[in-house]
Length: 184
Image (cartoon, rainbow, N blue to C red):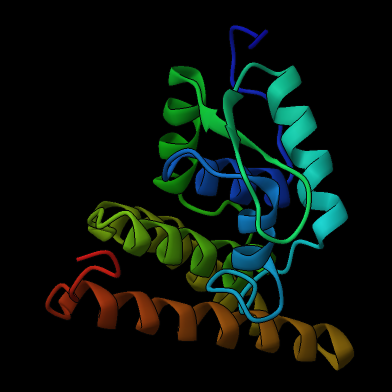
């Protein structure tokens, strides 16, 4: 059963849950989407074995449930799963929550943007919230660079430039007109 507060899930578990939330599916379909050539695998790959472990854990947590079976032309019957209400709510909450650590921006933010695009959800609130978290971090890094020397300066410069580039990226997305949905 789902605990009273949101469970701590790995990025792979969040991705698998989000894909299950798109509608009844099976592990093989999720594996294709999260694999090297899949829509999400281009950003964050989830190996097939990990997909099935994620499905088991999400089921144990009450975030997904069995949804029947469908015949497969390439092997055994495929067991379908679907998201529960709690799973839907958790996935939507995660997808709209800004990334907390700058080191995770590239992978986690891009995955969230891809998932929001797949579901035709407007990412603007996420983009604005992410910018709101990142601007003070970039300013603090810039201020700390002034006193830093040696490799500390190099590291702070890297972090500052990365944060600044991400702020410019977020600004460009917020100002851009909405793109057509992947599902339209």
